[in-house]
Image (cartoon, rainbow, N blue to C red; front, side, top):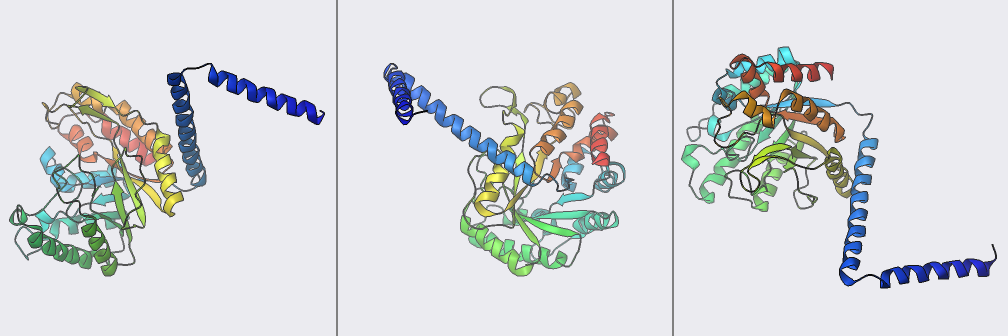
Length: 363
């Protein structure tokens, strides 16, 4: 095509764009501009998610569970029997365990590690691996787990004692080969859930440095909450990040109904991919919701089964496993295994447990 014809076409196209733009009012222009901007952002996020999934596609998937003995007791099942069933029946080979300060140091300066000892012994006998939660803020409500003698005391009182407790915990277990990692201060900056009131970044950095000094060989994980789009870039920089994924909860504030978060699985793939691009750090799912979140008027221990299943039914649990896999992340710990067991042995509803067994055994 002659050069003058090309120039004429370009000029015509430019005139058409200007004419189109001139023919629309201010609000329509704003709507079009915002739509184009959102499309670009959406496409970029989706592209990062697909890149992350493709990059890690050949890595093996590791599935585990969070296990909290205190919660098993709350549900009315025996902790040792519950964990053993997870090992023998489900075939769990990866555990996220807790080290509650309130349980281990009920009396100042006197440590009782017996419960954590038997959990690690069971995991070792089964050839399982463990990620150990440490610090003040750990999984399960109220998130913050100080002993009664440290409650309502000033930070100048409880923080040095917390560090002594963390030091004792790490020194006790740092030579145990089944511990693969530590998870420091569960969702430390989550201000909308839990009873924690101290979000001082300097404390988190100080605890991070303490753990690394005591046991530099272990991977140290720091978690974020589930639905924020931002990328953690402040100090400290862990060896690996973790994210919680909650899908269906009772919304008591706005809709007054069971609410399904609208995020597709690739959204979490984007979070993981963006983190890897920004800092070269991987991300895991440390809490994949696999437990009912019923209305406040109900107690999960004895709520009607049909009510519990509105939040998490066997069919939803099956879908939750698939959702976790679809994020592209290659390590995920399910949240709610104690409840599956309680539903089976106390309430005579083994369906959740059976779904989990099929998934773990088939993984």
